[in-house]
Image 1 (cartoon, rainbow, N blue to C red):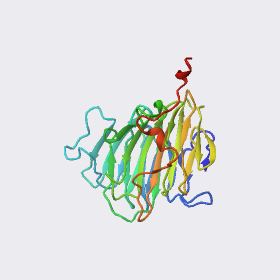
Image 2 (image 1 turned 90 degrees about the horizontal axis):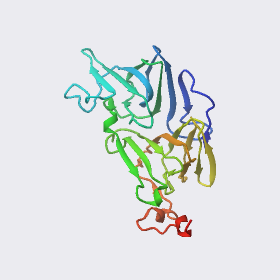
Image 3 (image 1 turned 90 degrees about the vertical axis):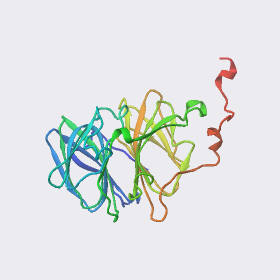
Image 4 (image 1 turned 60 degrees about the vertical axis):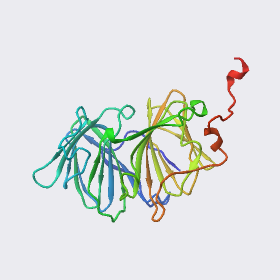
Length: 294
């Protein structure tokens, strides 16, 4: 199912996906947080939360000590768009900025239930995406820096390049075994496919899309149902349905993806549709227009 979003995000916190609605049981909420310069959003939730910076500059105050790579040295890497300061009193101050969804990896703040957080916009506008879900496990707040992100050029060298895309995994069971979420980003290049070869999994997943230029579009399928995708649309993936997708030529399709683990059945990897696995195999015989001599 696709949830279409007309126009820009609302100011403040806008709930885009309700975890358990008539539309689908996604087991997680998903929202945008759009702040004008100087505006502050405060929250303390009973949920596990992941805050991904999409655009602009922010100062984030966390009511607990935050773990991050480099905390032992007390500083972030040189030229990092993120700075972290452990306060003398209980808490942590984070300053982060992001100019481009396409050219920069994300910074993500990962919080356990019951953690105070305040986000202040330092730029004319700041935009974050927030995912929340139930998690009774107590873990330390964690900041994932852009340079930590696991970046892959998936399907490079196969399918005549038609399925090559950039996948950025922020955290999964390998580096956040305490979490009920898996989170990352995908850059679907113009005219190419992602989530391909077609695959599925029982765990619910959310895709949230941005297009560059913004009037762009793409297509996806959930099982046998096809949908057109536009800027700020959200795809709800459930029920083990295959979900391949493609961006229209000329338009780059960025999307945030987040998966909710199922108790006793965490997400590790997808199951590929056996009818289409062959296309990604070395030496696959795929017809090429060049054979016609044109």
